[in-house]
Image (cartoon, rainbow, N blue to C red; front, side, top):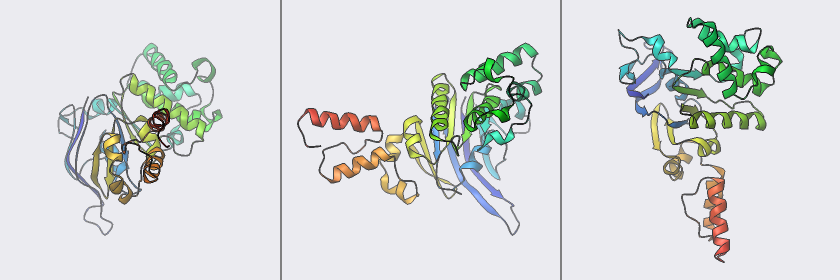
Length: 286
């Protein structure tokens, strides 16, 4: 399933004294099977953009197409299209409300009118995806869980709708390192299993580790788009956008400035380690 934005502009409070344009003539396409990282400084339009991807916001002008269908067209089944594009807001655990984890995860499928056996199967699959043991956690109150577990339970509620594309706005915000690693590992597994992922992030290291494509936004427009290697190679543009590059890329640049003969395009710890080991084995200074 592909999602395409064609010349999308979004203006809040149009015609009022509080008018503000968050997106300006944005065109981009998310292909089936991608892991897209959407990055940019605060206020650049990232959250506004992702809310267009499943129709929560309508463009002031332009089109949003899901598999070629205009999401805001007059005769489109918007509810069905939204079910194929799951959106996880920042701090989704604030939306937990049921008395048990299982009931909370089942809320969406039950509202779809699915039979109970299918709802139960979806709850079990969703909990397995987020590494919450059904036997241990299904009957517990979601408010008895740790912060990371609550986050995963909330994500499971979206996964129970079985979307083809999962969109997450800063999914690791506020978590400790262990909780953060669990969420990122879970997203990596979902992507390997065939789910298209769109992740808003401020962490260039997380982006370097997970993304197949990076979209950089600045003042409501797309500044850069490409593979992580292509985007992180444009250090000056990234610095200008207030983002910088991953720690491994910064270290690589610092070593090159000191005369170490490393390739310029390295951006992950594994790549940098392998390159340094290669130089050491060749007897070159490193």
